[in-house]
Image 1 (cartoon, rainbow, N blue to C red):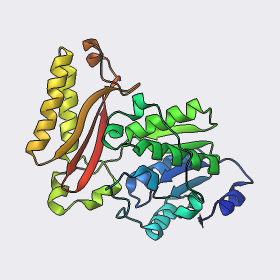
Image 2: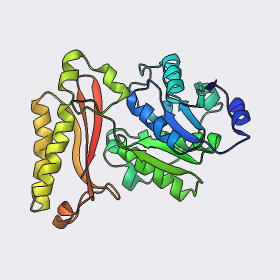
Image 3: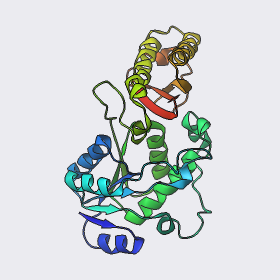
Image 4: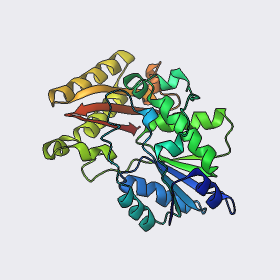
Length: 282
């Protein structure tokens, strides 16, 4: 595997040959990232992973400065997983001039859930993803479904800008106790790690209750009680919400609660200093 740090070296490496498959990451890799690489390899093209901690998607007071940077370990894991190229630019290489042109995603999608909790986050995400897609020119790019709203926004951006790339979403990889794999799980203390699967359990219980709701009022009550249940366990929830998969809007009719393969429940909550997100399609 070759590790490249400059855009010029990337262009030179990619100029001949077939278009690659891109796996964008912020590093500090875990088994979920490696599953994305494995899926990329199945697509039969060279695999390029990127490692870049993108300042644009972090808000004031968030964890940009303390976000784990583990590039050498990441490179070893990617090479073992069969990655062909690693693009690991620094900030000056990725943004040689101030990034004054930004993608502004549709607020009806980007302003909900994570977008409401982290203003400007998805503008930063879509801007850096668009830039990576322009630099790499991949045939496909693979993202995890744990960042469900992000995946939807990237798919919408690719469609609306008519970008010649296929976006693949891979199911969330979990620990045996149900905790969704995340680079931020490393922030959890030992006691917090034991309690962390409570978020996934709360989402499963909310999904089961949602299926049994007779009307939207019962659904709102179920969502409120799910959040309260987490608070009683020592969490600080931002949201636990049942949404339509198609557009992440709240169900508008009671019959939507019983449509198969129609809904997703999403949650974000802070346990100590660590903010975790998760989702479950149902």
